[in-house]
Image (cartoon, rainbow, N blue to C red; front, top):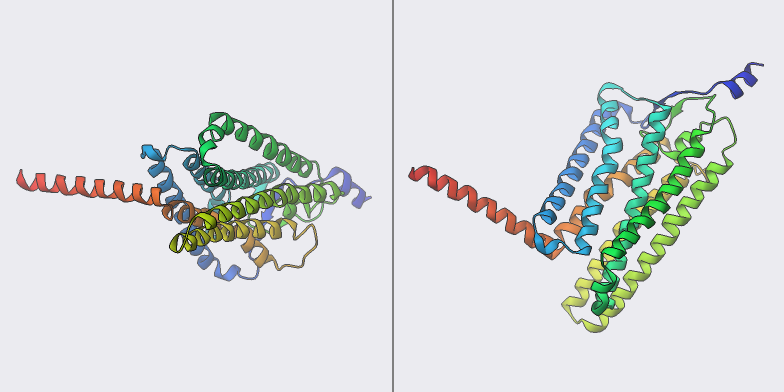
Length: 327
């Protein structure tokens, strides 16, 4: 009777995060590592947004996508890292079911949006290099509106389904989430009712965002390399290979780590909790830290704009100091 009562009429409404049980004694070191990464992500992406906003020549489709990527790379870490840092310092590791589901939606929704942005950036470069005469006709405001609708429909529908199915479950056993944020399967694995639909939707997410997006991205970069290598020679060839390979490596890390963390519980892969949690946080923080470098500082136009803004500020400060001395 007790088991029946618990299974039908009882469900936890609060949960406790236990993300690093084996390395909990080093939580202050973990705090320092993640707070530095978070600050780097915030500063790097904010700087990219500032440069693009204040440089007229960067108000083009490619840099609008870079700006959108920077916004996402600020939102997603902010959804998990501050709460995680507080748990390291003050053991504030409880969350309500509603809070957990809300965090789950934001993290997975904006991560899927990031995947769509990376896809759009690859297609943008492919059109610009492989079909330059039609670039302005293809990459226009109508195309961006279609991209926005596609992103909202695809990401919104799938992630609402994902969170809705998780919300319908009963949690009558443990309320310990073996993670430091509300990952989908980390919560679903605690359910005492059937989770077959949740697992199926989880696999569908990987197929939809990893299987499709990474395939299109890979084909786009292959086309770019093919066109550039045919037209370029010497140093330009090596530069093109280096740029494309760097982009692909960063993207592969994003998709591979995300797939491992998302599917590890679906496929019952025996990954230690600390490692799985670290991979889950890396999946969020690594792109946010590296994207401002890969798509920002290493881009000639953004780098030149950044140097120009820096020189203007230095000259302004120097002029003010000189004027003050003369006065």
